[in-house]
Length: 117
Length: 114
Image (cartoon, rainbow over all chains, first blue to last red; front, side):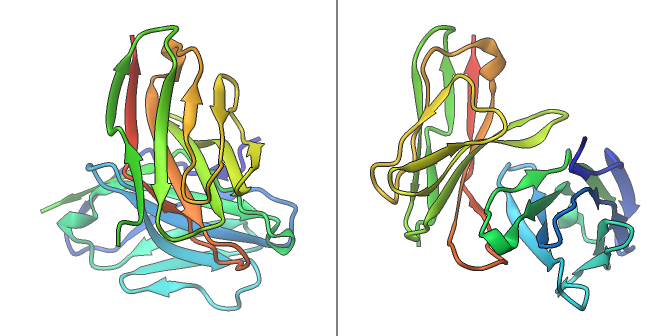
């Protein structure tokens, strides 16, 4: 079974609009972390935001926020006021077993976001 | 601040040849990882290492060998390259001890096996 599911292969959004990228996950471990990475056309992987399973508040980093709904096992990335430079591939990832010090990440298949001027 | 560097950036080889991809990090991170990225699969973990001389298999280890004699280096070897190993390979590293350990990635190596 897929641990991380990103159901939107591609999204097209007008510049300055907000965009939500979906991510659902599957785990029975109570201690886990969720990550979002951005991969622009140049290919590098850029860390954006992190949410821990025990965090009480949704994570925010500048224009990025994470809509964490634990009961629904979803961790959607919200980008406010999108910019042309936001056009990229976005990956959701999960690390289980935080209490045991586990470090492995499992990635979703990604969503390609295109911002139109 | 060199960070994490991969070499070569691009490599073309032939089926059956041995290929080694290099990864070097300057942060003294305990953990290092190798992923491959293929269309439709996202990134999949090949091998990882928790410290020098400690390595373990990931999701797709077959056909690959790793070693870690020094903390800063984590080479990945394809002992006999196959066409199915054509992919983009990413090395990553992270510190230990924190739940919010971020994995930092190298720029990737694009490998083509003909």
